[in-house]
Image (cartoon, rainbow, N blue to C red; front, side, top):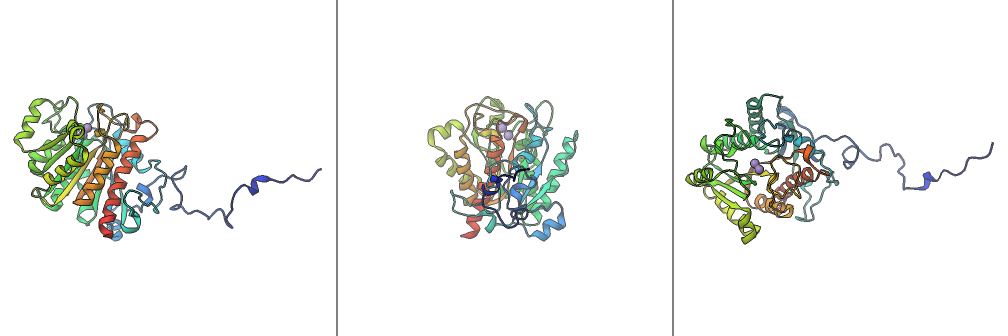
Length: 344
Ligand code: MN
Ligand code: MN
């Protein structure tokens, strides 16, 4: 028997006195640990816990993709966005862009998912409406993780119901106008939510502002309907020609031409598929991520945000989780902008 050699692994790091309790669950970045709520904020899945939290913002999952016309998978969006590997997934996050610690200034919770089940699209939209409405009535700003874009119909309607109809303007980032009357006979496709919101009177057409439209859908007749409703839109070509900064200034003014609050809807396919491939209906020639993130910081920083959604992240089509990370960052930028306003 010889003496055991030095076990050098013992000298390879700075060790805490008690390495088992050195990091609590909330200190750990997302690595291989439990992936639960958005950014590890507290979970308040029911009315009493949400009420007791006094939350100013509540994340809501809307895991539904029965409205998808192309590639499915957006039902996995809330899970992927919540656990996106943006790293720095701790409550200590500090924004270089805005010089703010969003989770120190802002009371943010995760209200969990709307109770969606499979094969019942209309019911799914109804329970999303109820979930978002229950969040809004506590006074928290709902930030909804889709799901395909059909969820914006019940979600924005819930926010408008709480605020009172036609008092909330909408800024809608998308490749597609989503103003078709029907798609394949369905009135609740992901190509129709904006039509429903306007037709039913939740949002006034003149305060519905779309940014980033490009490609080949919807057809010309639908744009004529949009013109009749006084919708305003800014195409990707206009962003190329005038720059995103000028376009976003116009979009803010148009959405607030009457209303004093805004619902922000972000279809991740507004970003070029080279940088956001994990989505159902990609169209080449979209915005840059940094243009979109800057636009979100500006809009949320300047207006009174009534609600928000980020939709159409389809993890099965994603590459290296880049689309989920971008969607997560869209939410984080909104939270940071809200925190700046609160801290000011
Ligand atoms: Mn859309
Ligand atoms: Mn779209």
